[in-house]
Length: 197
Image (cartoon, rainbow, N blue to C red; front, side, top):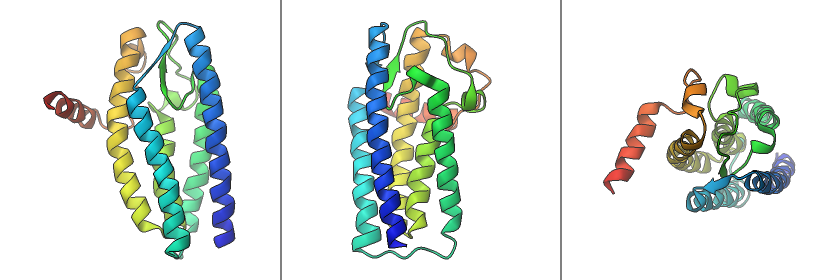
């Protein structure tokens, strides 16, 4: 199981680096077209969260010697299904896909691929990864801490992203019938709590 961990761990780091390169290229494309980035401070928090996730996972699985549960195949299957969804989302968005929040005024809202069925499917992928990857190796602490932390951060990020898109595109009209990743009441509660601070 340790060998499987190292292979998967290295592949994920390579994947993340590749995504950062793709995101940088796509960001330059959007800016060149007249778009801009929003939520840069929040993005730094997300990068920190994901970096700490890898450290925590490695620490719990290797240094603390967590043991894979007998049902490890279940989170493994879910993890790899999430990868399929990730690339479906990336290919569907094309040059508009990014790890940051980039908006392009009056750009057409993408409604193909998984975006026909769910807003922000890429965030569902991230949520699934942060839960299932640690569970494969019995790293329950990492799964719990990062799943909960990520859910809170994503509730803020989704609200910010949807607000930014709604300001410069017909996002709300186009996506009105597409289910939300997180319940709208949760997003509203997060927005209200931020207003009070």
